[in-house]
Length: 551
Image (tube, rainbow, N blue to C red; front, side):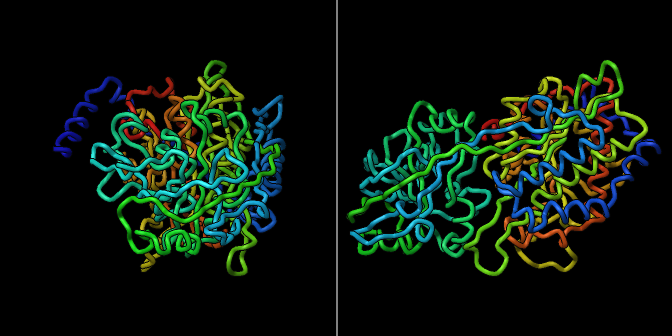
């Protein structure tokens, strides 16, 4: 039935007004090819070796390394003649961050009087509570309540004033520590969040629980250094975005923290059930438990980098094609095992950062201007939760209604080598392959231009498998383009896949496939150029599937 439905939708789309125009072949002129060919592997390599060097210390948000990278981008944009498009005639859009610094010496847990230290056996993820609390603990499986699947681990349990303990499983950098239960998909999350379905944090907030404790699985315990790196440092939020995040529905944000295997075993030793041994039923823990949290609040700043290349057409230059990448990564972890303590982020997303810079130079050296303007945005804080993209879309420094499309680049530098059997590289794109996400979700015209430019130019192997709304990786939600799509702007996202060095200190610039990187960057550049020269802006003629309307 589903295949037949898709066939019917495809047939109907062929009859849609404007389809023939949208599908007209894209002709790449010799002049356009020459402009794209100023983007070279050597330039990409030189710039990436700087941006992803140890001197940038992993470009955390916020950090000196990120600020130096921003200054490097500004320096080049200024000398190439770009118009500053940030705050007050500058290239920077400043974001004030409120940092709830953890006082590690005064943040700890006790179980029956035994003390467990911060960073060693627990890390704080979020919450508004400070001081000492001594709540009871209730174990609730993985914490998902889904009425459509008759799942309710809280049946018969009063969680008010207590900490809900749930069993964590996979991922770290992409968060998702407590994924959906087996047999449950996003499509099953129907109705109202908190009433018809809820994750543990939502349930805790709506039912007066004191907090949520994620119990480390073997995977999380074995990767405790990465847990501390991603969650255990000072909690920082974007000040102007925080009210909508912290007080959903006016309810306080419960404390959420992660417990090590050692702490988990101390809590559940001798209890009626033990998550480590595979306990499935919910129950209340009898031990005396206390959690002390001490913070050191402060305000710090970071920035998006925003620049405009004005178009040559007196009328169309008021409209813009936006092109973006995040220039941050996750920084440095002095407690990481091994000698390498710096997460250089060459592929993620040094590759996108430098690709944008190469495209900017290509525009600057071109003897002709595109008809529309081109808006370049290097986003900060993507690794923290798409901060920069959300901030720019909610507090834009340009007239965001004049952005006709947004092209996003995040991780375009790697290739799967022949004979590679590493399971962590199983989804890495091949030597001529790149994943294209979202280009056909909102606008037929954008989809046609994206595909047609590639077909008329370097003929990369475009793989659309992640366009599936039921993709469990949910890549559509995990990079900066998402907030442009929410804003009604058609998007396209280029990505070569996760790999063994994803969110590892081994993501170094010497592992980039520069020949492929050059081809992808040139292709995206010409896709942008074709969009700038369209007679009419791409129409939003498709609705996002329901699965993609809520992050």
